[in-house]
Length: 491
Image 1 (cartoon, one colour):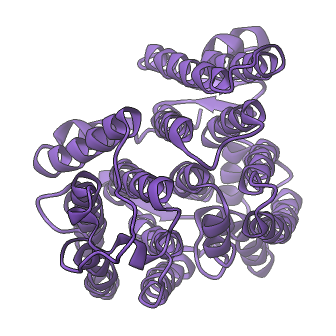
Image 2 (cartoon, rainbow, N blue to C red):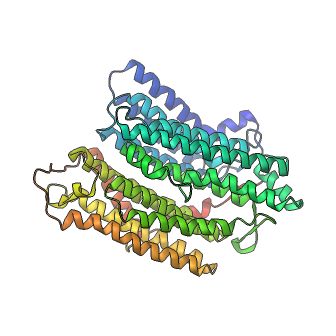
Image 3 (spheres, rainbow, N blue to C red):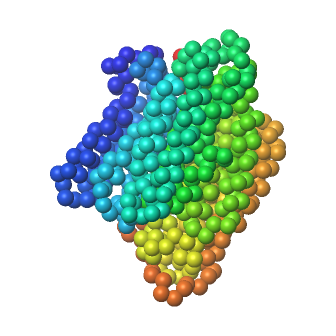
């Protein structure tokens, strides 16, 4: 199906709802003195957009707006993740002690960033991919520097802007090479031209590497990861949580959309074949191993929990890339399942960090000393569940997610990659368990404030805990959803 502009509007109803929500939040900020009004409107708007998404399930796939955007199950799956990430970030922000001023602007930017992620997942054109990625980046820079009087926040935003500008410049330069080689910016047309023609292999390799720079920066893969620790440390905790899940998932959605339907062809039995002259899997294989190893090794020495989770996020990007390099639908399905699991684990971990920071004002590991024995038994138990799930211990959701990734890798006979992944999981257990030991086995320091959990934060925390445990026992609905969503519309 190729829809005209007016017909296309019916397929982007969730995006239109988000646009209306942004306008409503800004207007409410001008006319209402209630600082939480914008958050409530943003929460309601994203929830309505999520409902509108569910109504699009099962509708005909096709091109929208002159093949700039595509509507298919793959895009809907990632829009679901973005919506859940936005809901969690807004919910956390309502209880955050960091988000105290200019709340209307803050919530408007959060919803705007979600809108950009929607378009990243459904981009089918190089120009649309670039514009949507830049839109998400620009809103993320402002959200990172939201704490105007905090030097860490301003420094983080500046570094994010500099790294993002360099990566964006390299990416669009690579895209210009692809356009020069193929004469098209449309993913399907690029695939058709590269299949039939015999372009210069060196030029095509350079173009792919430069384009990968922009995607690698978005998913925080080494060596494009250097912004992550400072940004996660300096940004408000809800923003760090949102970036760690939503922004990373958006980067992976665009990465998968570009490298598979555009630069590969689906063969028999769910296996993919790379196009001649585009030997990218070996490059990404190295990136995967280096990313997970550097992320885990660097996390070992961290004392700030937000910074530790930042390096952990880098390592998990390496794990997800394992499923990307095996050139099979099984690997892609494992990636998509792991993103849902990662959402639960990482949002939950950052939520507990926010709860502790609200009570004590501390983000270092020593601030968690004896947490279970000074009124914080609930957040201590919840954080232990999230951290052990991030490690990949059974019977939690993280174990199932890693099992699917490793199974896909082993089935395609990438044994060394699987071994590196297992070793890195063992390494990660050390720094995750160190926090758990501090909470349960170390005695509290004198004068530490008790940690209590509010109703809103508690509801979200226990919901994420329950989902993490349940998905470790019964994960069939989510893996089936990922399987049904692994459909790229290519015309």
